[in-house]
Image (cartoon, rainbow, N blue to C red; front, side, top):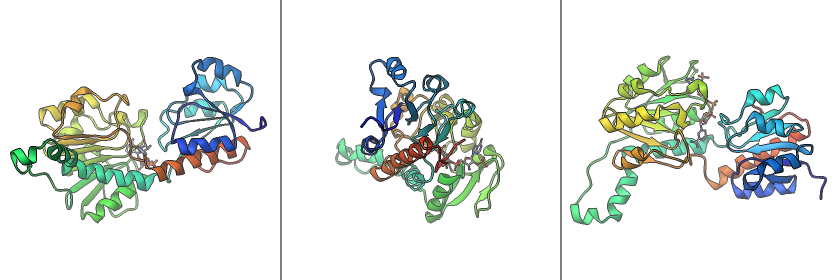
Length: 313
Ligand code: NDP
């Protein structure tokens, strides 16, 4: 069938969900192309939809001037030049809500893994150290401690509810106070001084760049724990490495990094107090299928000129 709308996929997501695109669209995968410029030129007139999970810049939009919609896979769309899309009359969508519970589960898991040193303990058993050296060093508790959540949006609120079940004392910092039973801090620094654990779940981009800086990390202190499930850009990675190295910060659990998938060797070398994850907070089969289907629905609607389910602009 040649009458299916033509779309260009810039970067991939869950294969099972991507395979479903073929039912509705003629799909061109730019990331698999040996000559992306030639591919873009070949669909310049026909392409009506763009989808992707990473970056979509103005140059790509200019190469596909008939695109009506950019369906982004992911709730964080800091890689998409939304202003450029809006200026060109292109609708942009993301995939909020369907991943909130998954990411919240993961934030709790990463916090627990960091405090209770679950990956380190797994290695301790595998490396035969339990038999040779006896019991492992004690770890730190999570329940009942003070946690500060940076960002209390769709995901942040789910994280807060889960922490509440662990009998934790919950604070949050956002720009605007919410009507919730948690302690609000208008200053991130003040919150960092008051809590044991800081969990970041704000969007990336210029507005949140390096919010978690040296001062904030020092305020968390030598027993403090920083967990980042937001974006690598939210924390000053150099300052984070320095704070961990100097013992000014106790531990970190990181799902996101400044230059993914490259992770600084210094972080990899810190095997005792740092838990590293490959940006996988939403990556379960069920949730990635739901995200992929939302991308597809938004593409169908955008191409048909109808309102998107989850519009960004
Ligand atoms: P929402 O837009 O629902 O929530 C964002 C929250 O951040 C709001 O509470 C907002 O409050 C706050 N916020 C925004 N800017 C600032 C700022 N400058 N200072 C303080 N607080 C701020 O987003 P979601 O909860 O759906 O998602 C949040 C982010 O999580 C995504 O954008 C994405 O980057 C990240 N994420 C990471 C995943 C992973 O795999 N690790 C998976 C999914 C999401 P206010 O506006 O009042 O400041």
